[in-house]
Image (cartoon, rainbow, N blue to C red; front, side, top):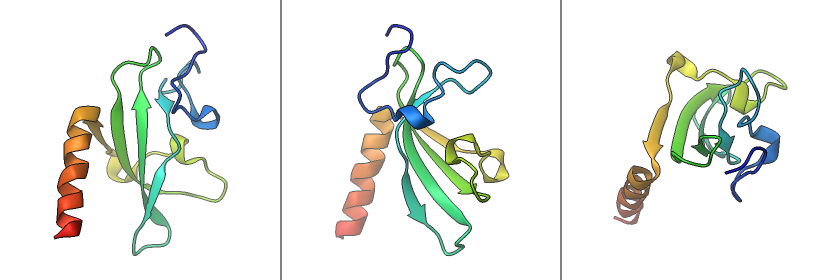
Amino acid sequence: MNAQTHPDWCARRVCTAYLPGADEYHRSEPLVVKTDDPAINLFISKIADPDGSHEHIELSMLQLSDGQPWHLTEPLAGRELLLPSAAADAACRALAELVDA
């Protein structure tokens, strides 16, 4: 992938792939899952390295302050879960089976 090009799914307003000093990832808009605590939500997004390789699904529990961008917020407990795309597909199928059961 050439400099300043983006995968089709990359949301430009939250992309940090070409920002020096940032985490340098293409990222999608998140799917936000509400929790029992209105201040804390689960954010699920797709990320990839600047060259478009190493696609992962990122899951992060975030507590946002007013006006704070989700993609620049540290996850609670300092941890997020990164699943390679192939593993994420399997996890989605397993969850779908649980929901349908």
